[in-house]
Image (cartoon, rainbow, N blue to C red; front, side, top):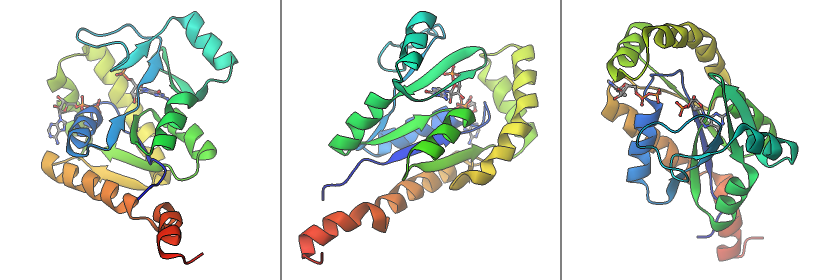
Length: 203
Ligand code: ADP
Ligand code: 5GP
């Protein structure tokens, strides 16, 4: 059944487990792809240009902003990140579903701009657990970790306007919940009605 691709926009306070969950869900659903963003941040060891991000200079990023190439963009932790309109349009027309792992500022822009996006907020079970996960990841300094914890309350307040909230307590349960959202959204009447109308001549 032919239909437009779905955009799943996923945000979370840093350390909630968003990256781990997104990877898992992409492995489960073959029709789901990770939207590759543009960023001015330096690649981390192991990150690949074109797969994890398109790593661009500040001049190139600014040019893209000026020429209106981004569906959304934001400055996060001192670097710029953006989703290109072309990426979204290409996936929509070929019917591929996309996971956008983006921050709250970017999600807000898409909420205003795109109808039909599915907005999902991932939460840790508590501040204590968030702290443990940020420490356990051991990729950030103590200073960076405390800044992320300080930012968390303000970010969590924004969860109220998302369509779904998933508490990432037990990982397997969070995966099940995310899977359920993806499956339910694919059956949403507004996404399948056009095809149904055509097949059953009910126009
Ligand atoms: P984010 O992308 O939201 O910043 P990550 O996916 O990097 O977070 O996860 C932060 C840390 O928490 C990682 O070490 C990850 O393995 C761990 N983690 C993720 N989900 C869970 C969970 N449900 N229970 C325990 N640890 C988890
Ligand atoms: P990181 O540098 O750790 O990969 O990502 C830092 C933050 O930037 C994360 O919260 C991530 O969701 C966000 N981010 C990644 N890509 C984009 C994007 O295209 N747009 C916006 N607004 N945020 C993004």
